[in-house]
Image (cartoon, rainbow, N blue to C red; front, side, top):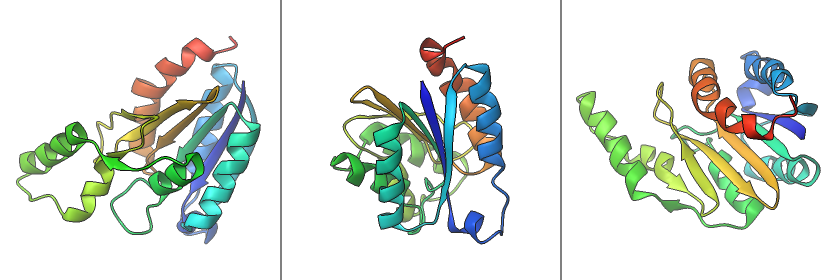
Length: 174
């Protein structure tokens, strides 16, 4: 399966942080026998992100994204995937309940901005994030898979190891 990695975040393009997630995922794809052909980096800009995701969707069977799943205005991965696939974002009650519960456990009131982390499109299934508040997305449609994971490395790596990699094994060439 042709694979592609899209790293999302203006801070990567500005050189403020090093994109260690792409290197990690590239190494992991090799063990699954996936044919990694492209790695892209894109800023936190909705139009550019949609463009990069559309190109990835047209040419790859597996797209892995990292970043842009947080609660801030510049976290646009969900919105970009929804626009690219022409699907509507909606709050998933189970995700909202889970998110509010986490904040309650921490003795905090959940900021309203975190509610966007409880949204899904019809073709997306949430991926558990044991290390943070941003669930990932597993989108399977039109013979393609798009997996959106958070940007913080510890969150991405645990999500990859415990949730994503086991699901991808059925598509593995090894």
